[in-house]
Length: 230
Image 1: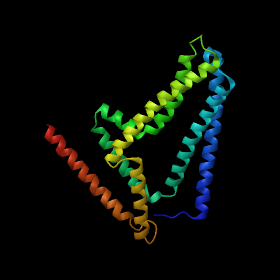
Image 2: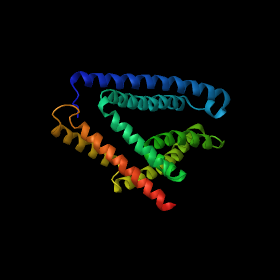
Image 3: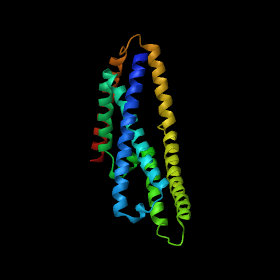
Image 4: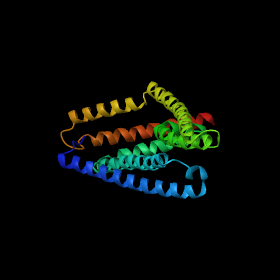
């Protein structure tokens, strides 16, 4: 396992900062453009208060900034670990083979489990817009009352999504696939690699052999499974 030097840490910081800045700027520009376009066609958006419009625009910038910064961090890490490309390709291949044997429903649930936190974030933003759209139709309420009512509805919808996400995370933890389990496993692997390797990539050939053996075992297991079904 490679230990980052001070120069590499600084380069990683600059890559994340650059990605986050670009994502935030693009999100702010896109959010502003979308808000202006929607204000011309949708009366509900046009009648929003200035704080609500500012919230929608800044939320777009923040959301996109976080995503691009995360992608920049992953891209930098990948560029510094070329020797692990084989393992990444092997995992992608096994994942593709596994998905090929799953039904459409299982694929959908697997996607939801994998992207549950992104779905929760998008659902929160969508619930705010949907709640305001529903409440704005009530002409008996003032703008202040509509904002409060929309916030209550949005919080209820967000809470429901969070409960579903928490249920999935608990289920994953019971199977040893939760977010905390992955972090612990990664830390254990890093610690073990630091203890074993005298130089970068010393144990890589063992990982490659084990990966190929596991791939062959998975292939044989799938072949026997198909034969049993026939």
